Image (tube, rainbow, N blue to C red; front, side):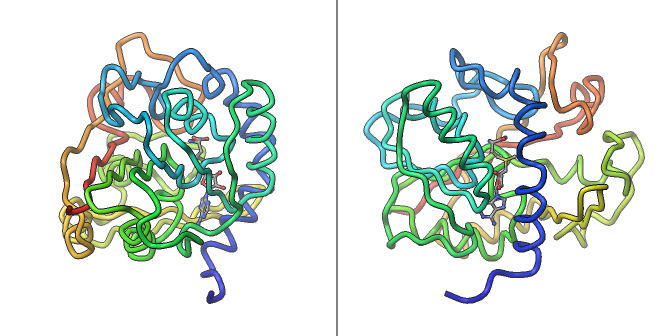
Length: 258
Ligand SMILES: C[S@@+](CC[C@H](N)C(=O)[O-])C[C@H]1O[C@@H](n2cnc3c(N)ncnc32)[C@H](O)[C@@H]1O
């Protein structure tokens, strides 16, 4: 296995440093075991149908963090494996497993070099997991490799639209001004008090062409719109009025060709 890329090293340090504060800040939203919600506005799976029926599937949570999503997917009958490169995040995952009594294997690894055999999973899924923090030109081929023919790849990431609307200040939520080039979108380097990190995204057409090059086809693109009274612990991403007008997150629903 080759050395991890520079952005992977940087992001791993950032997650190791920030994990405890992140879990504490978002626990009220993330650890609601009675519901399976998506994204920063916690929109119920029942309203979106992004994952559908998962019972009996071999499923990989790709960038599981503290496994709040994976635990709920396991509660619905999937055989889940959680992958994450952060030891601190996986420590919180074990805590959540103790809290809920739901247990599955956890693998500490870089998603750009997933340590699984070809065709290991029926479903690869994440909610702001590896897919927003690693290079899609490395992760999409890896997911295509570990997915079984006809398997599904379901992941939520920030939209290209919200990328254009963030300023260079990571604490400033999305506004109404376009700050960067759409066509040159690939990576964004952020600088915060506890260190730098990098996020990734692509223009819509590039995502679609990248999927197709690796034998994956788009079944749906679910653009998340919060309810009028929605609440979030992620206030730094976008104000509610913004997210009611423009999609800040989208769930790609992708299928491997049978
Ligand atoms: C926002 S969390 C996602 C977990 C959960 N859904 C949540 O929203 O808290 C992103 C996770 O992706 C992990 N991650 C980022 N880049 C990764 C990579 N290249 N390989 C493995 N894990 C990665 C981070 O450690 C972090 O736990």
